[in-house]
Image (cartoon, rainbow, N blue to C red; front, top):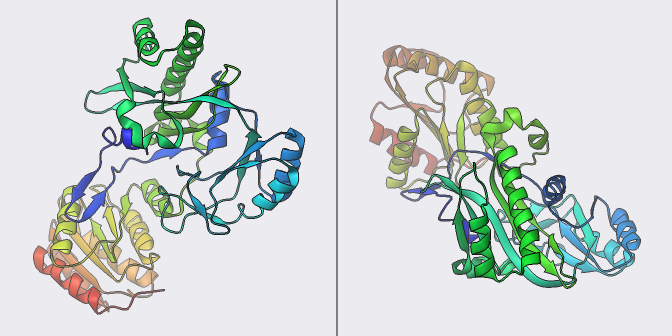
Length: 421
């Protein structure tokens, strides 16, 4: 996400742990975004998606002109990124079919690392190719929500492309309401600030209003055109786009959500969300299973206080069932980073005896816990739950009713546990 938008999309710190808001938003690959823009009469190049070097050669030979070849991954900064294969970026200009074949052979099936990818990069499976454009001017245009003002905002700048983050102070902000959209008054302000001619402003205002239409009709949370360019012939074309959509709108945006592609480290998060669990992957080696976001954050605090690092934020919520808890254990069990698990439950709506039954069932299903597990049960039916766990005589399990001692014990147990591989 460009630095200019970070003040709008907020994250919060919890003593050494960084939490992103647990609201999954669909992101689209570039070629899907271009198709959507075209459907809303927003100008984009005629592009082609390829999955093999041979297809890349055929497409560039057919275009018969310098062509842009782009790696398709869910991350920005591709042009300045580096491929593991040849150290070059993920956006390249090709002049011939042979050149396209040679480059595609080092792009498809290899990892591209950018400042927005996980360490090691993302695997590239597809390339997007279109005829190169002679650029006279680059612009940055985005629609998103300003949470502080509780209304949508248009951001626009005559500095676009890869340099937008270092020029965030040149972004113009125009707040608007969804009922009236981009008004003539806003159009006049934009023209005055950015110096568009009347003819150019006619095209720009059409693009902006179509963006608002797309934003509203498709339940978007971010529409970002970067860059929107003016060509040497005076035409406006969107060369790259990033969209995100509200996951709550999945039920009425089935076509768009059918295009969903997830990053490797989002698979567990997605699977958890389908089971009604709130899961966020962190960078430690202690797995947490907790009910309630507040208790989860407090648990992470105490683990950090005693020198441990959490591998996840996993909130089973107040509506936890045996099935959802088994899914939670399944997610934790396959995370090879985890060297210990802390189960911290305060039973209010959730019954501790049901939690205990799920723990015992999970242990049987997994043929025992391979890492130390510290269990703290307090609240509704906690006595019954602890009795059940005691009778089950589970190996590798420590029961500790005190919150602080439970955190301390899992940290100490983890230090003596062998990491799984």
